[in-house]
Image 1: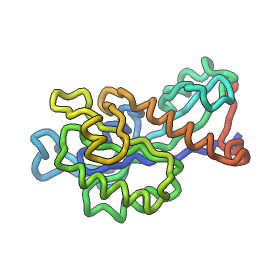
Image 2: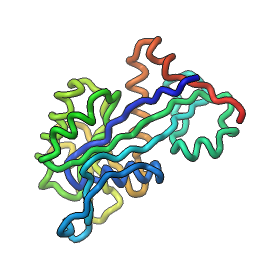
Image 3: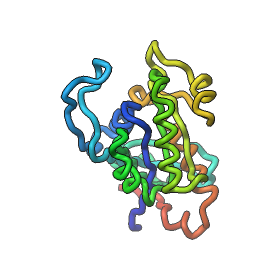
Image 4: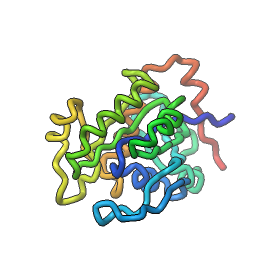
Amino acid sequence: MREKGIKIFVTGFFNSGKSTLVHTLDEKAIHVEKELSKAYNEEKTSTTTGFDLGRLVWARPNLNYETEGVIMSKTEYLREKDEYSGWHIKYIELKGSPGQTQFSAVRKILAKGSDGVIFLIDGCDLGNIGNGLVVLEEIKSVLGQNVPLRIIANKSDRSDYHGCEMISNMFGEQVFEGSGKFNLGIKDAIIQVLKTIFNGAPNDNISEKEEVAQDA
């Protein structure tokens, strides 16, 4: 069966952890970046200027879209494919964007055609909440106000993390806790976006993107 991937756009303002998230989920992800002339907050030494591209697989033992299943990198799936014989497989293209203000046009181009969005907020930097809102509205202007979306207050592993309740109140939308660096809450967020995508999709669209794993 010809592979057709679900496209999930990973975006947010500068330094929200987009590249880290993509590369945590897929260590072989492609990354187009540039070194910063001066480290940001004494920790960030490079920034995405093109895109990040990771490839994942969502494997489920049945067709029920309420089934959580397993999220893994495509590399991991191919290595362990025999374990998932008979499972239903969806391929996911995880595309990350640059977050700086001047890359607005690039974000809009990369966002086109996406089926869902993982939106990141730097949970340790409340000063950039407003910039995050600008980016979110920018993406919704391209994909629509009802695009399947999960907003994550990232970097929950850090001691200076402000908490998703405070950030939800400031952002004006429900925000979920997570850490892209340690993969906390991230796969769950992707699964929720996938459930929203497929529970609202026409049957013919679902069947086009469904594959049943066979023995290698």
